[in-house]
Length: 176
Image 1 (cartoon, helix red, strand yellow):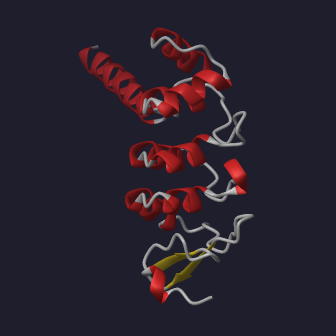
Image 2: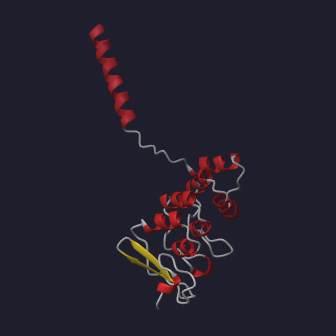
Image 3: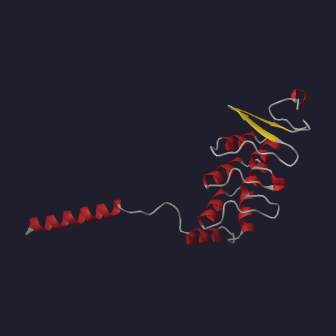
């Protein structure tokens, strides 16, 4: 009888261990849980609050918005995505978080500029480096003003037709 009990105990223990291994739960919260989290942090689930969280550098809240179902590439009234706005501010932590959440590195924001062009405009080198590391980055966009980004091996140079803003070259070296 004790041998039967031991066998039943071992069988049950094995089933418990196997069921624990088969757990398919992810470390991502449900959309409902993410919305509750945002509420606790003082945010409503809307685009205005999403952009506020991004501009405040609140990476946890931005992750919560995306987990709750916010489109990571939604645009604000200026035509910016959170990625283009963060790149323009030089917020490397937010740019990295948005890229991890699947933000479109080629999305165009204000004035039809990409995040890379906005980062280069104000010489936010850390942000430009994060963007350049993205394998699907289009490095050939031009702004309406004629700015272009050229990538040659590891060298990235931003040229403006007017030669007023040049990153990587001195103005006198700019010959277009």
